[in-house]
Amino acid sequence: MLKTGWVQGSEKAQGARRAAVIGGGIGGLLAARVLADHFEEVLLIERDHFPEGAEHRPGVAQARHLHLLLKRGLMVVERLFPGIREDLLAAGSHQVDQGADYRILYRYGMAPDKPHDLDILTFTRPLLESTIRRHLAVQPNVRFLEGFQVAGLATGDDHARVTGVRIVPRRHAAGETEEQILQADLVVDSSGRMSAAPQWLEEIGYSAPSETEVDAFWGYGTRLYEVPAGWKADWKIFLSMNRPPYQTRAGIIEPVEGGRWLVTLAGVMHDYPPTDEEGYLAFARSLASQEVYRAISQAKPVSKIIGYRRLSNRLRHYEQLSRLPQGFVLVGDSVCSVNPVYGLGMTLTSLTVEHLETSLLASRGGRDLDPLTFQKAIGKLVMGPFAMTTGEDLRWPATQGGEITLKVKVMHWYLDQVIRLIPDSPEVYLAFQKVNHMLEAPESLFRPATLFRVLKQALTPAKAPKPLAAPAAAPAAVEPRASAVSLRR
Ligand SMILES: Cc1cc2nc3c(=O)[nH]c(=O)nc-3n(C[C@H](O)[C@H](O)[C@H](O)COP(=O)(O)OP(=O)(O)OC[C@H]3O[C@@H](n4cnc5c(N)ncnc54)[C@H](O)[C@@H]3O)c2cc1C
Image (cartoon, rainbow, N blue to C red; front, side):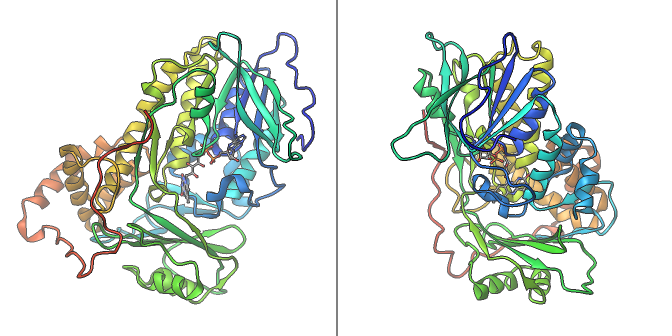
């Protein structure tokens, strides 16, 4: 791996095709693997220096918080990096059966305790990333360029095609620019939620995409604990859900490598978990279930409590642009970043990379890749999950952005009925989890087996869900809703 200093061998070899990936997070690592099958050289450009092992780095501040990889995402990662499951397990990851080991208190009761064939691996995000990095590093044509920040796109005189990226060393003396151009035949932006691609496009004469943002004002508070010796429970992961529209608090505990628990408490509508000892424990005790509190009140904390508040859903509409330069595409959070409470982000990112893989195969290794067609397909791919996460966030009265359309109201009603069925129906629970893990489309919940149960329940008035009363004093932050926020036009 290149560490610091000036980029050696920055010139492309004569006749060789090179791809450049911006960002070495989950999307960038997967994209580099996929590109390695089609390009003589793949440069993975990351502003951070990668740590040797499963340690944190500044570029992915979210990595300190609980990161569940859904089954569909795990399948993509395992396909691209065979043997990674074994490596994660050997490093201390836990395999969890969604039905038998993952206990969830939904708003109408506990999920059934019955094994599924849906398995999950638990790990800290740094362990996942470092394990993927190790697998990627054996690709002979992938080079990691660490400590360099992409500052813009390079083009020819007519700006019709991106010909590379402008990079600067992350640490350089004041006043020195030390900018360098790295040539590439294809540039893939995977620089995450804070991607500067809209500005980069404007700088070379293109329009920035419009954005849709929907924010229910969620906040996380996360801490690691040592699992107490002799600890016994009927769960490996426990999740206590909140209940819209007014019961704002949720919490989850999972085992991770190193004999530790990773605990994330979450609150919506500005009800942020405190980051002081006493407040954190009190928040845990106020959840609908006492289980997370019971566990952590007996355990030794082994980290600080870390807060996080940038959790809105944000979609950049590259698919609506009328033109994009050739040789430049975007994947992952740089296009669509969803509220992580639903655990979709890495899986969605991996699906955008899968689309890159398919597109490379269909375009002679990217030679005929049309960026607009590509982004339209990505827009289509992320639209359903984005509608799902924003739809759920729209249940909270303080949510800003988005619109409660008739379709959203119907989905709210129907999903509420499904969630009500969960405690008494392992079949409905499995169907629901298959959608949750992105193995089935949401429409699968309208198949006769579930639809029939929903209708039967809805027509039985005695079993109608009890509405939650508004709290005597509504959370201070409940402000009137604003309609769709489009930040850029
Ligand atoms: C608090 C929180 C909890 C989450 N929990 C979950 C979860 O449980 N499950 C789940 O699936 N998802 C979760 N997510 C979402 C998940 O983190 C993202 O969806 C995922 O990381 C997106 O991958 P990415 O590669 O697009 O971006 P990232 O993983 O964020 O990577 C972007 C990379 O680009 C680098 N970079 C940025 N700009 C530049 C530049 N100009 N030049 C060079 N490098 C650059 C950054 O340093 C970083 O390494 C969570 C997110 C948050 C905020």
